[in-house]
Image (tube, rainbow, N blue to C red; front, side, top):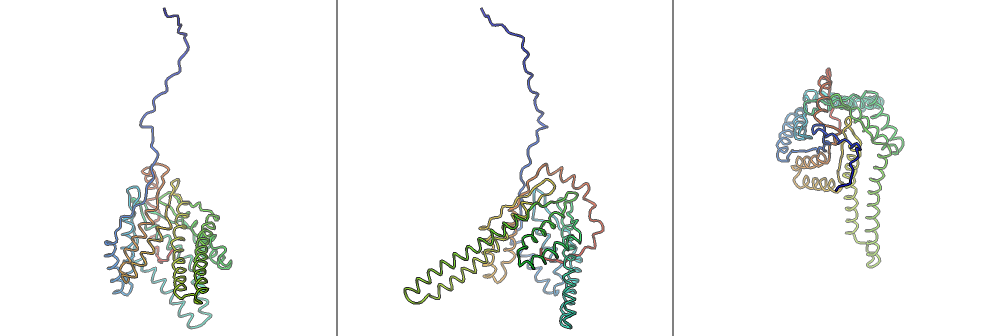
Amino acid sequence: MNDTIDLPFPSEPAPEPVPRASITPAPSSQPFVFSGRGSEYFRIWTVNLLLSILTLGIYSAWAKVRRLRYFYDNTSVAEGSFDYHGNPVSILKGRIIAVVLLAVYHFAGAANPLLGLAAALMMVLAGPWLIWRSLQFKLYNTSYRGIRFGFRGSLGGAARNFLMWPMLASVSLGLLAPLAYQRFKRYQHSEARFGATHFSFHGSVGAFYKAVVIGLGLWLGGLVVIFVGFGGLMLIELAKSGDMGGGKLVLMSLSLYVWSFLAIPLWMTLMQNLVWNNTRLGEHRFQSRMRWGRTAFIVFTNILGIAFTLGLFTPFAQIRLLRYRIESLTLLPASGLDDFIASSEAHGSATGEGLGDLLDFDLSM
């Protein structure tokens, strides 16, 4: 006989099942991909070079458009590629203006020192405006999935970041150079937009000084090791035979040169990682994972290839370095990219109206 008694305690309600459609998977990271090949770009590079020479440089504007279109078309992220819409005529006009300004500066300086000083001042004051227009041109003529980028920065901001801060860095004997560079990258990135969505930059001044200290520390440390190492060997040789040995001096000089050359890819790696790891597009983040050793290997072998082929390896070298820099980047979405693209397109399709007269002054940034 069963003496247990079932007491009427209320049981806890079973949890309601979560609908499958309401479970949204976390967006996955989207690496940048570069599909360009050296053999393809070699043909473009060769034709561009020959036509630019035959036309005394006039075709160089069309050459730039062909080059950038190839690079942009072969750069993709999240199964979408970029496009370049630059007008060669606008590029040519910008270059003509730049050549005229340089000619005025040259002939004014040759005619009269005071005129040369006035022309130099004019060039300095025109610099921020030239860079500002170049930034506008480059971003407005770049698109992704049919949506154009843009640049909202003002001329006053360009004057502060491209004139005032570099001058302060110069008079401070370089002590303010990291601060000036941080201000420049902050202006360049935070004033850019993709459709209706703005970029933002979060790299601190301290982070730029830290990168500079790391770079200079590694470079100076390497110089000390080379000096001490070879210096010790030469002193030992001097004590034994009374001759330091010219071969060791040559090897030391070569080692110093190579080590100083390796500081270039070190700086390139530190700056790309610092800048892109602190750049956001709306709530979406970027991640850069360049490595100094890999960058140095690519740069060093590129130099050797160009030297041993008398320059014919140049397009292959450009593709190798560009591929590594692009494929070191990853987009870290905060939400679904399709919804983000749609919301950016709604307000971004008409942005840039009236900017068709923009000129590209082809200034290296």
